Amino acid sequence: MHAYFRGEKTEAIFFIGVTGMLLVIFGFAALKAERGWYAWGVTVPSILFGLVLIGVGAGVGLRTDRQVAEIERSFHESPLAMVKKELPRMQRVNANFRVTFYALGVLIAVGLLVHYMGGRDLGRGLGSTLILLGSIGLLIDGFAERRAEPYTMALMHLDAQYQNVVPNLGQSAVDAPSRP
Image (cartoon, rainbow, N blue to C red; front, top):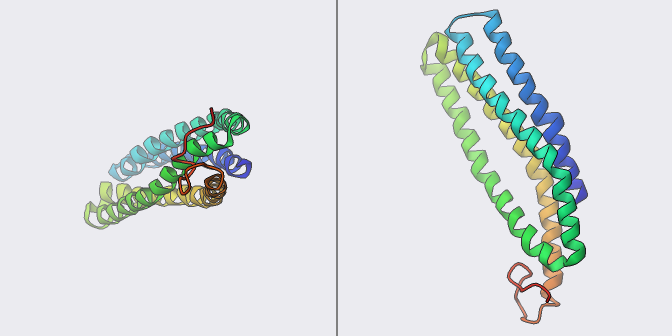
């Protein structure tokens, strides 16, 4: 658990947040270098996506310690209750990676279309920036997915252990009632 959340916090602050700041700087630098439509095609999505990344990085970075403390407290009170809550959450997180990978792939494909078919100025700037942003998103989720898999497997292992102690055989910890 600690490796997962330590990685989550590190990625949030030092990769997502810093990348967001760099994108905002990049957006303003593009506008400073050139005032045409190409620069606007680079500037607007870079700054908007950068601000989103700054918010996500800060939000995840700030909530992680509190989240770990809550999971630890829950585990010490009732390991079964913690698994009942945390395993479905992580299964949703893992399922969302597939959706996100496709969405980011579509963003990159749209970027390619806009770049090659959207005109020489705005289309090229916007298209190449969408490709960059989609690629950054794939990197972020790629790291996150690799962290989530072992954590989810550990939760599944705990769930399997609790299947052996739950009175209703075959009932997973996710479906089992909490201890009184």
